[in-house]
Every structure is written in structure tokens, then in C-alpha cells.
Length: 445
Ligand code: NDP
Ligand code: 2IT
Image (cartoon, rainbow, N blue to C red; front, side, top):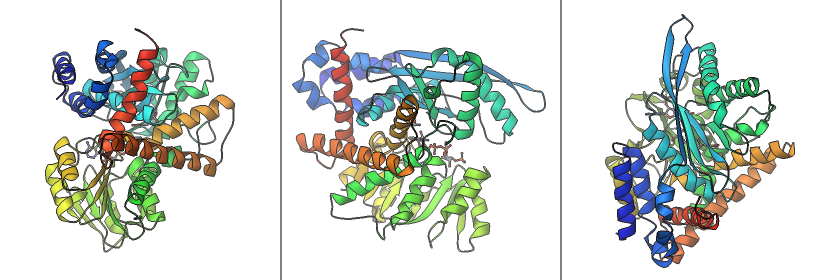
């Protein structure tokens, strides 16, 4: 390994002890950068990697709120503004009991390069809380969001930091957060949050964007092998926002999705998942996925099982980090899977990525394949700033163009260094170059 990169990774380890997800993400990006660093001495001379590895700011705060029975709970809130050389901090909020500073830092770090790949003016940030939305009433969710925003609002602004949704945060939560921001600031500042409801400043296609975008990316990958999604068998993990619209687009384009999951287990439907039933169970009723069995006699719920055990052509991990490990990768490959596209952030472990790539499968990293969500968030900011509302078709067309352009950038940078099929390498280099250029252009700040 290049010694400058090795030194920087060592420094990151020393500075961030125990932050395993963050260190995993930094290693995965930096290990790709040797060719660029070797041919661009200013990167080391101006300590560009050291500056990229250190968040510009990290905010942690107490969130106290009252449940419906009058009990007081205390959670921890986070917002990490990692890098703003390309634009205001942009990235989602995650509400999940597993959230720690480590989780938010890894997500914010990934977001820098993802946002750079979109070609739009957005920097990298992420936030959230260890609050668990499961089983909470609507009123409890509202009170939590209000308490969370009561601290966070000081640090937000359409030109400063613009959160959106992620795990456990969708249009309902964004509505409560926006309402509280408006109440506290006395400003109707549309562009301070994205993922708003359509009709209340939200953009058409934002809800669908991450899942649709991942499928548009997969289409581009298959085109390089003169292939298409028509007739392909697919596995999609998760059954949340990303998974649902990934599965929907796959089916619209003639593929068959035979398994999906949530944190309780997976469902297998050999005739193809009925996505309207999943939407009704998970998106509308916020229930558990085992209910699917009641609606489809041929389907089976497999408690605690992942989706990866079934034979498929393409796999789309769309739930959470490190959910597809080495054993899963081997099973997928042995059963004929040739393409893995990450809808989630860092769902594939490094060992699994290596196995997939070394056995000739195509692998698309989340920072490229799931960039459609944040890209349409940026289009929402654009619509808010110009007081315009674009049609579904207009936004969807822009999304397709952006995903095709990210795909092209990954391949071009891969080709330049004789690794045309290595999307992880190409995405890391393409994302990094734009950020490094801006860091140099702004001087030492
Ligand atoms: P949702 O909250 O809508 O859905 C998350 C899904 O993943 C649910 O099915 C959930 O199951 C499952 N899940 C979450 N955590 C775990 C866990 N620890 N173990 C097993 N299953 C889990 O989130 P999204 O669909 O928005 O996000 C999914 C992934 O996509 C995340 O990695 C996120 O960072 C990423 N992403 C999201 C974007 C967006 O715009 N929303 C954009 C780009 C990436 P259960 O219902 O049981 O909790
Ligand atoms: O991981 C992600 O890109 C998101 N959760 C979406 C961020 C956004 O600002 O739309």
C-alpha cells in the first residue's frame, strides 16, 4: 500500500478508536486512491487526505421527550457535517436503536463521495438518533421529532446543512421536523429539509428515487454485457423505502423479485413478490413482513433468515450495513448470481466484496448505485429555490441521466487504470477527485 495512505489510515485508527464502521468506510475509500495520489503530489503536500478524514464538525445533543403514558425518555441526537467543499452538508437522518457516533460518521463519510458523484452542489453530512420508532404512537413520533429539532435547528439552513430521511425517517417525520423548524425560526424555509411531502414543497419521485436509481444503475451495468433485466430473477433485502421502490422498478422492467425481508426474517414467493401487498404491510400499516404469508398461500416466511439463500441472477441489498457477508457472497455465487447492486449504505462486507469481484461478478457500491435518493433531494432543493414544481416525468428523466452519468464516470475512471469492471475503484476515484480539487482550490481552510 502507498505509504501516505497507510499513514493516514493509521492516524484515523488512532483518532477514532472503536469506530469500526467509520474505519471500515475510510479504508475502503483510501485503498482505491493510490494511483491518483502517486500522480498528484499536491494531495500529500497539502494534507488533503488528513483534511478529508476529519469531520468539519460533529454535534451531539440530548433529546428528552415524553411518551403517551407520561414517562420521560432521553435519547442522543447527532449531526455530523463532514465536508462542505462542494456545497451545504447534505445527507439523511437515521432513527434506529443501533445508531452511535460511529454509525453517523461512516454514513457522513460515504455521503461526501456519493454527493460528489452526483455532480451536484452538495457536501457530505448525516445525522440521527438512537431513538427506536418501532411501536411508538404517531403522537410520540411527533414529540420526539419536535424535541430533536429543538436542538438541531441552530445548526441547519438551506445554505448550511440540509437533512433528509434515512432508516426510520420518512415523509411523516420530515413533516414534523419541518413544522418545528418553522415554529422556532419563524421562517418558511423550504430548502432546509428534503424528502418533504409532495404538495408541501416535496419533489415528485423523491420517495421512489433511491430504489429506482439503483435499478437504473443495474440496467447500465447489464448493458455493458449486452444484457437487460427482462426475465431476470432478483433478491431484494429489506422492505423499507429503498427496497420497496427497487423491487417495484425491477418488476416494471420485467424482472421477478422472489424474496424480501425485514429485521424479523424474510419472505420467499416463487411466483414473484406482490409489491402492493408489501407496501400495504410495511409502508402504510408499519407492520411485520410475516403478514405477507396470509395474503399469498404459496409464499413462505422464514424467521431470522436472510434473502441470500435463494438462487438469483441479481441481488440488491437494501436494508442496512454489513448485511451481506462472505458466506452470503459464496452462496449467491454458487447459485449463479452475477450482479450485486447496493441500495443500502455499505451493506456488503469487505470480504464479501472481494469474493464477488474475484469470482467475476459485477459489484456496484452504494455510493454510486444509491445516489439517486440524494440526487433527487438536490433536485428538490433546486425546485424549492426556483418556486417550481417539476412533473414526475421531468424528475424521473433527470434521475435516469444522473445515474447513467455516475455509471459512466465509474467506468471511465476504472478504464483509465485498466479496471473497467471495478465499480468500487472507479466510484472512489471519481468521487474523490472532485472533492480534492475543491479542497485545493479553496486554500487552507
Ligand atoms: P427504512 O427505514 O425505510 O427501511 C429499512 C429496512 O431495512 C426495513 O425493512 C428494516 O426492517 C430493515 N433494517 C433496518 N435496520 C436493520 C437491521 N439492523 N437489521 C436488519 N434489517 C434492518 O430505511 P431506508 O429504506 O430508507 O434505508 C435502507 C438503506 O438504504 C439504509 O442503509 C440507508 O442508509 C440507505 N439509503 C437510504 C436512502 C433514502 O433515501 N432513504 C438513500 C440512500 C441510501 P424493520 O422494518 O424490521 O426495521
Ligand atoms: O444515504 C443517503 O443518501 C440518504 N439517506 C439520502 C440523503 C438525502 O439527503 O436525500
